[in-house]
Every structure is written in structure tokens, then in C-alpha cells.
Length: 495
Image (cartoon, rainbow, N blue to C red; front, side, top):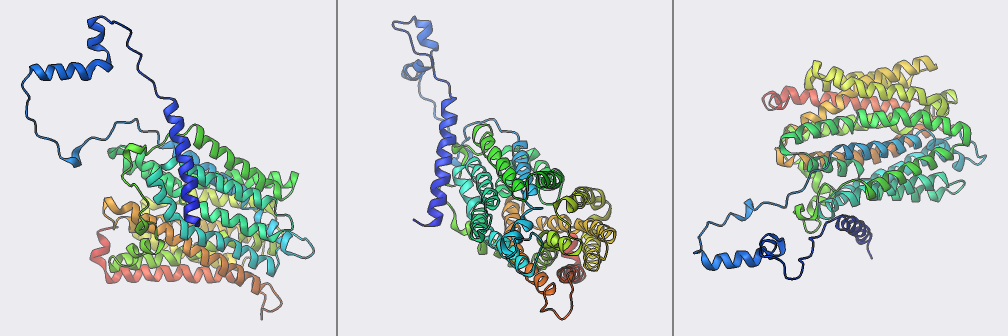
């Protein structure tokens, strides 16, 4: 049986469980008593077909125009609150926030021959490769899983993603000296990472047409670089440090697994389905939309403006991935920091990421947010590369976090170029591009960092990955500046 078939079978079973739960709550009609009075027979629902038939025998038939098939009304249902999607996305990233600070130390303890949790050239490379495997599999599977949610509903896929990440964290926490378990864990993670995409679809289902754009705006502000993710990290990072100090490096990973299991149980037993069977248009998976290369073609083959903006996004996202991929190892190498020392700084970064876009974005507008943000981000990364003391590192990282305003601004500029009925597909293609970029970034930065802290390097330069990331940010800035200059009329329509 192929891997895709196994995934489809699992999601089908979850869908049947959700459907069975719904049917158990349905009410039934009271039975008709024997020899009922005429008044009871007239009004009892089971007698209405017979009564209607007798009336049609007495009343001449009236010819009516049949409504068009496209206008046939779907069965009515009560839309669930879109806040269910916010809750599950938040819990997913809370578990991730518990895992991020300690995972590099767990990997180092496994890779290093002496069992030390400090970063080494070898552990840096393994950390990058493990994460690259996760992102590559996410790139390959996220479109397929999103298409499955169109066929089987959102709940089964949300439950599948929550359970998959719970298993991932538990395997990482139990890895001990077994390096193979780390790869198995990220194999599971990459094949189940679809929570953000499916929750976004849940918001679309749960929102009436006149509130859909506003609710998607709230979710998108919460999801990529905003309140939901940043809020989860603000709680998860320091909590991870506290658990680690008391119970060891593997304990936060097991706590993250428990959060994932709780998220799974809430989905299965409490969260209402946003796409009931009667409202599902798709009857089978559309492999054209599930194909990651097919979604990328939407971005790169549409117009020169969209192609240039997508190229700039790839460069900026590649630069953005540097802090995410090696920050823990970087501060461990420079100052011997562990989760307890790095967690407060990560909390400040989360706060800045949550505050900066809504505070500065409306004042600067899309064009300046993209250009100024990319330059500030690049300069901040350069400052981080040459930070020689904890205070200078803190100031440089906080300065860098302000530059993150370029990312939501560029996403909005790209989304504005899509028609309303294709905006979801375009944003899905953008998220697919992100995963491909992250797969390249994690492996690249891990190897560059490992090389420049090893004895093979001509000079010791631990900040080399941040210099490379700054170059990518400046290249993204140059691409967008040239695009605004060469296509001013087209660009002005979407700013």
C-alpha cells in the first residue's frame, strides 16, 4: 500500500468517527400511535406525503419553472465559530514553542561523543538536516493534505496534524542516544504538518460571505507572524526553560506531546465540523492542486509583477529562516546560553513581531513596509553576526524583529494580485514555497555555521550564516525596488 493510500485511509477513519458522533446526536420523530385521530394524522410528519398526494388528486397540477441546478440550495447548517481554528492553531504552536528552545540541545547531546549538550560542528549539521527533512516532506505533502480536507472535512485533518506533532515531540523526547529516532520524528512531522492551512480553510467555511475577508484577516494576522504564533511562543519559550531546569532537556518535548494530544482530543470530541458532507464539492482528491509544483506555477507563470514579487519573497523568507534555524546554537556557541538564558530574549522577539506589523504597517503603507522592512531586517542580521556581548546581541535581535514588517506587507501585495476566487490557491502556493525555502535554508545555515566554528575554517566566524541571510534580504529589497521602478503602473494597482 502506498504512503498516500495510508494517509487517505487514516483520514477516512477519522472522518467516519466524526460522522458517527454527529449521527448519535440527531433526534428522531415520535412514532404514530395506533388508530390516531384525524387531527393527529393530519399534522404528524410521517403522514404528510400521503396527505400531499391526496391533495394533488383534487387540485389540478400547477406547472412551475424548475430552478437551475446551480441555484439549488444546499442543506442549511449552523456555521461554527471560526475561533475554533484560532484555538487549535494556537495550541499547535504552543507545543512548538515548548520544543524549539531545547531541541538543539537534545540533538547535541546525541551527536557529541562525550554527551555534551553544547553545539559542535557535527551537531549543527545534523540539526540542519533533521529540520530540512521535515520541511521537504511538508513541501511535498501539505497540498495533498489540504486537498484531503476538501473531500473528508476539516476535523479529520486537524486531528491528524495535532496527533502527528504530538508523536513527533514524544519521539524526540525519547530519542536519548538514538539519532535515527530524530529522523523518524521529523518524518512524521513533515507528513502531518497541515494545521495552519486547514485552520485557514476552517475560517473560510465558518465565516458568512460578508465576514469572510475580515475573519481571514484576523486569522492571517494571528498565524504567520502575529498574535497567535507570537502569543504561543511568549508562553511556550519561558515555560520550556522552567520545565527544562527542573526535569531535564527531554521534559519540555514530552510536555509538548501532551499539549498535542490535548489538541487532538478537543478536535475529535468538541470542535464542530465546518465542512459537513452535504457541502463538500470535491468527491476525490484533485492531484493537480495537490501537486506542489503545480501550485508554484501559479506564482511564477502568471505575470512579470507576480513573478518578481514571488522571487523577492523567496529571498526574504530565506533570510528570515536564519534566526529560526540556528539562533539556539549560535547563542550557545557565543555565550554558552541554554533555554533559560535565551527564552527571555525570544519572548521579547515574539512581542516585537506581534506589535510591529500592526503598529508600523498602516503608517508606512505596503511599499515602504516592504522596502524599509527588508533593509532594517538585513542591517539587524549584520549586527547580530558581529555581536560580541549579550547586550549588543539583544539590541541587534530586537532591531531585526522590527524589520519583520516586510513579510506580511509582501504577502499582502502578492495576495492583492489574485482574484477573490483564487486567493486561497495563491496563498497556498506561497506557503508551499515557504516550505521549500525552509528545507534549503535549514540545511544551508547548519552547514555554514558548522564549518565556520570548526578548525577547517580559515577564520572563526560564527556569524557567517547571518551575513548570508543579510545578503538574501538585501537582494530581496533590490528585486522589489527594481520591480516598482520598471512596472510602476501595474504595481500601484496592488499597493
